[in-house]
Image (tube, rainbow, N blue to C red; front, side, top):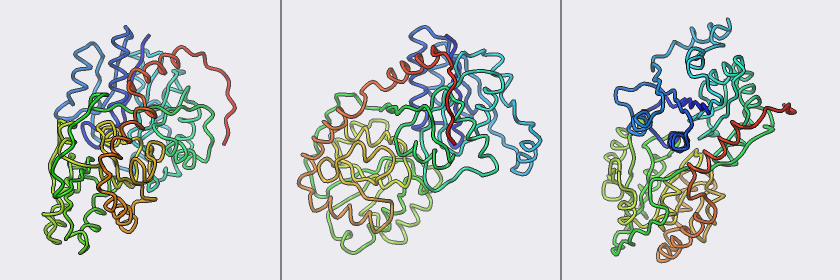
Length: 385
């Protein structure tokens, strides 16, 4: 079977949104399918994509260059972008195209072209935040993209509800899928012996709009937190806000309370040096760092976004703030601090919960679903809008 993957990821060479489709593509290769993928070309190709190509997948890298907004809008109004990516689809002749949207506002034109060419496609959406709404001028295209997909996959119910609100439509067919992770499924890193200071890790790209590291600074500059033995280490690639973060730490004199550790390539080792996860995100899908922390027996302190409410029992195996604001983050961090002597026990409960509520073989499970979708005959469906 010929299965093609199209990634809309454009902000950086690699990210958590790419893990699911790339690993599923690898599984499909192992099962004997013909796999191809279309991704943005960066000066350095991400290692997982290189490995996928080395194992037999047909790789196509498209240019990062973008037309200006005005020119793009004119071309769209003239219907001159309707068959974008047609040549790639003609070359690959896929029986199913899997479109991985890194964000719900990404360009849906690949889906429009698939419709025009009669090629079945599925959509997997990795993140849908409340702070960005679809451009009303492109709403018809977005609605057609989702409603005409053979299947839509989401990594959380919240993300599905967000996209349905954006589309003003009910999706007739969808499934919730699990994201992969980068630790062993039976990981049990040692608990840090020293608790002075207690150590939290915020494992996320440095991106204030989504990951909200700015709120950590606003909370930790309060007098009560300055005097407590608590340290927060930020781990993750810079996605535009690292310089601002460093200046904020300088301005408020918070280098004792907060540090930046860079990118960790050994997550289990990271968790052997920290007691709990702090993830104050404004938007999420199904955060890989949340899954990994819980698998490693570290309880999370997070916001009620994405999959968090489905995986965490507030006050039992973690702590959840209702939303990402400085006041609510302070309140949830205070609750967690008052129970700090229970963090190890709560982490053990978190490890049990994640193994009961989340797949331990998500790439294989997603590959199974894609095979089923590809084999399925298209049936007339009632479209609700």
